[in-house]
Length: 173
Image 1 (cartoon, rainbow, N blue to C red):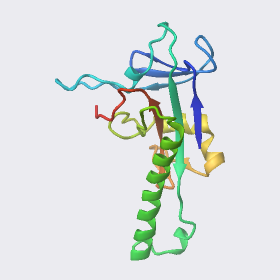
Image 2 (image 1 turned 45 degrees about the vertical axis):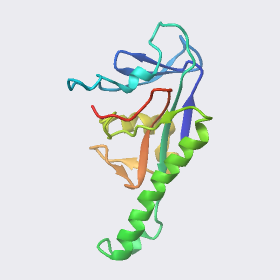
Image 3 (image 1 turned 180 degrees about the horizontal axis):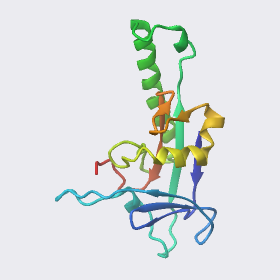
Image 4 (image 1 turned 135 degrees about the horizontal axis):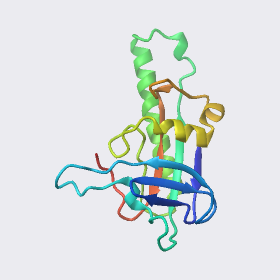
C-alpha cells in the first residue's frame, strides 16, 4: 500500500515533516516528527531537511507513505522452531524488503529517493507507524495491525516514508 502526496505537499516545520493536502496552504493531513542528529560532527541532519520550509518559496516536493507485507499463509501450520518455518519466515522477510525496494524503484521516476522506515535510525520512533497505518488504512487494506508497543503483526511488514531529494541519504540520529 503506497500513498503519495505530491506538488508542494510536504514541508518542514522545524523537525517535523508536514503532509499538506493538495497545495500549499491546504489542509494538514499529518505531521511526522523527525529527530535531528545531536552528535558532534554528525551534520545535525533530520529527514525534515529534505523538504521546503513552511512559508518559504513554494517548491515541488514528493513524499510517499508506504506499508508492504509478504506473509506465509502456512505459517500457523508449522512448528515455529522448525527449520522449515525459519527458512520460510526469513524468505518472507527478504521478499518484503525486495518489494519495498521494487516499489521505490517504480515510483522514483529517475529521482534520487530514500525509504526511511519507522523504527530505524533516521526515524527511530515506532509510534509513527500508527500515523502511517491510519493514513494508509493499512489494517483494512493489508490485514496488518500494531500492538500497544507498536510492534507490527505480521512481523514481515515494512512501513515508512519515500523521500525524493537529490541529497537524501540514510543516517542515524
